[in-house]
Amino acid sequence: MGEYLRAALELLSTWAIPALLLVIPLVGFLRKVKVYECFVEGAKEGFNVAIRIIPFLVAILFAIGMFRASGAMDLFVKLLSPVTNLIGMPAEALPVALMRPLSGSGSLGLTTELMKTHGPDSFIGRLVSTMYGSTETTFYVLAVYFGSVSIKKIRHALATGLLADVAGLLAAVFICHLIFG
Image (cartoon, rainbow, N blue to C red; front, side, top):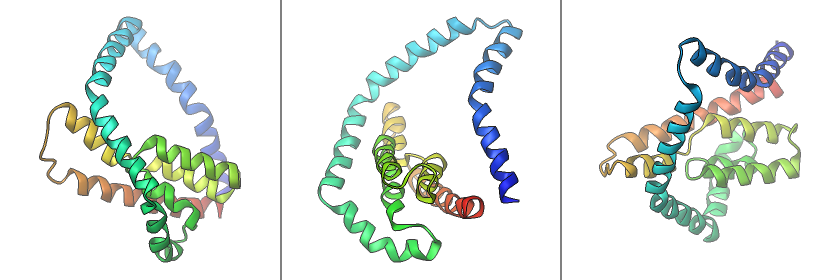
């Protein structure tokens, strides 16, 4: 079953993006939507949003830099490694799991380092790639999106986002063990 599932996932991952790039303009054309003009208008709005969120980005990137430079990341890895062993996650993948809710680019950098060290087809490479795709940059999203519309009371959004990250992380570990052994 694992071989068939892996082959199906490889086929799906190979053709998903080209299919979307073909289907979206085709549906727009069939519905008589001016696709290029809509794209340009959306790009203008995106630029304005980018200008508004720059202060929030600077703040979150500064906090991430302090977190890593202070050694807190290494301390968390050492403290949580007994837990990762229980769920079958290699300790090398833990920094990606801890960094992902904070920063997409930071976790991508850690993922790239692990792939250079262990190889993209290694279990660790596949696991961190799956973790990267199945979790969200929760703190980044809260800072940027809530900050851009001036929401100061986030209520349950942080707890819900972190719970979803844990669920995505556990699912990634389970699925990688199921498919890649």
